Image (cartoon, rainbow, N blue to C red):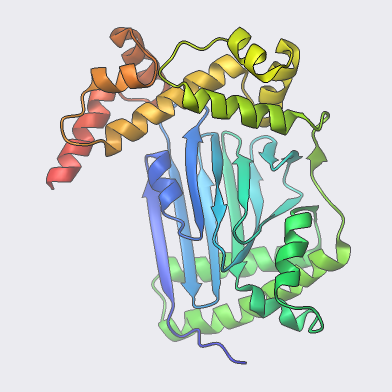
Length: 325
């Protein structure tokens, strides 16, 4: 079966807001929560045809990403720059790690304060040539069981450099036919790379020291979301979850890179930013502050400005100006 790659499209994005960055990549239905302090800066370059997409994403703040992968694609991703370890579905990851976003499955990813990641998404049907005796859903089940590898092989370097070439061509607005030819070669190289991961089949990353940490952190995060506008202490969380303060602290530090108090503050501020930059007509800073658990408006404004590099009133004004343009 042949695939027509002549109809290619591209995305070039420079974002100053985590939500804008998260929504730009259509194959991952995701949300970003900024964890580190400072003005957000990110970018995405992607080129796609009907059965393949390649991308490079840059993030200059730590973010916690949650979402669901597109049901029609398998995506593998790796980093070419990381300022520190990250977190992926129960494991700590580094520059040697490769991760797989399985079709239709939820994922959790935390990036450090600076990260540059590249990746490729393929329709599962393209993997039939690796092992024709297996049905198409075999690969989806395989990647659901094996979604992280440690890999420093030559083929990864070839894939990374080929992706960089395609994206550089896209940025230069090169001829459509030239991009299509590069994608044909890249697609075959990507299939070979998927095959090399399958043959190796050795789980990578560093598994968390305590297996219950992801479960504790996930349940605590859900409680925080449900009670975002309420006073909520570490004692409250421990009582509700039935865990010790030490376990809660270690779980959050392992997964989010922050303690539970700092993470709750970051979560509340991230929700405030979403409401200020995407709120309904009539939204006020005071209403948003109360909705995310800040009853003291000057304190909210101070914390918000420290986190995002601008006052909440500036975020709201920019959103209103954008809506009028």
